[in-house]
Amino acid sequence: MRKTFCFGGSRLARRMSERAPMVDGCVFCDIARRGPTSTTALLYSDDKVVAFRDINPSAFRHYLVIPIDHIPTVNSLHKTKDDHQLVSHMVKVGKDLLNQDAPNSEEHRFGFHQPPFNSVNHLHLHCLALPFMPR
Picture 1 (cartoon, rainbow, N blue to C red):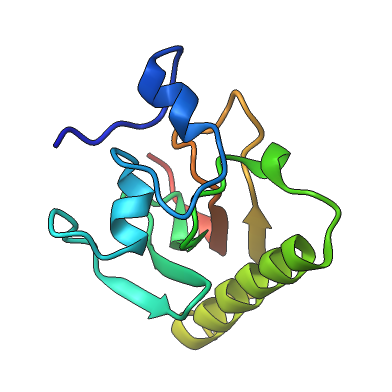
Picture 2 (cartoon, rainbow, N blue to C red):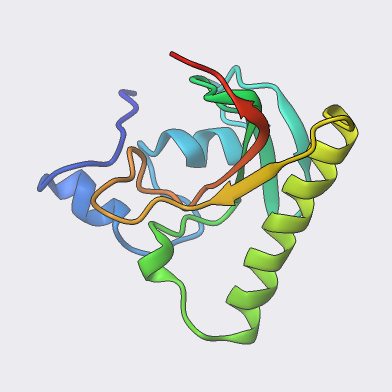
């Protein structure tokens, strides 16, 4: 099955723009569910999120924390207790990983992309331990 980066006006892209337990064809859903085609090494996993290294790191340490359930973007989050707890948990997992793997890093950065600047329509938190690395 072809994995897509969930962009554009196709039927698949529209399906990926909805909240769901899992979306076929979403590369991050495949990683989160440890699909048979995923070769991504997980740094952390629990019943809510997984974390792994960014394939194009832009800092000394650059990890992604994603929810297991398919949530397309930050715009799909609501002002609910569940979403607040999920995002807080994502940040905590990212902080714990950076503190463990880059204890001497003096600065950490965390952030989500806002559409249309997201390359994958599956909510993901970038967790970076500075310094930034030139490409």
